[in-house]
Length: 112
Image 1 (tube, rainbow, N blue to C red):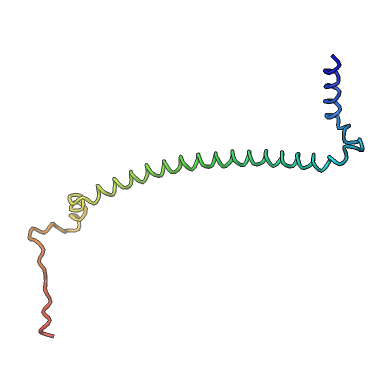
Image 2 (cartoon, helix red, strand yellow):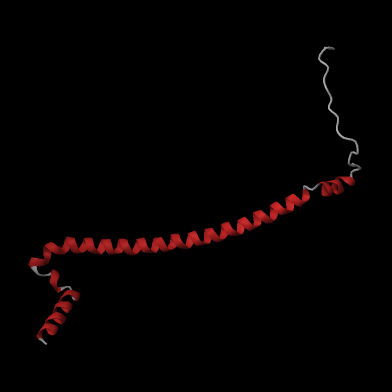
């Protein structure tokens, strides 16, 4: 029973901060400050990591959405480039598809 009472006294001694006032423990104050600073840095680092993880997840969702939008626009453009659609679009302007094949025009260099 004395070990439990001694342990609880030690714990309360530490929690109350009475161990700092003793002259033999004064040299431990820089070490304790370093531990507190490292603990705060660890907490800040974990919060920052969570923020970065949330950003990464939202960016992955945005990339997936943009990929689907890209595929949709690409398929619409591919349907517009079909010959029959182009013929229908320019028909209002009086243009028609040529029935004769294209001819190559050669430049005569001798007449210059």
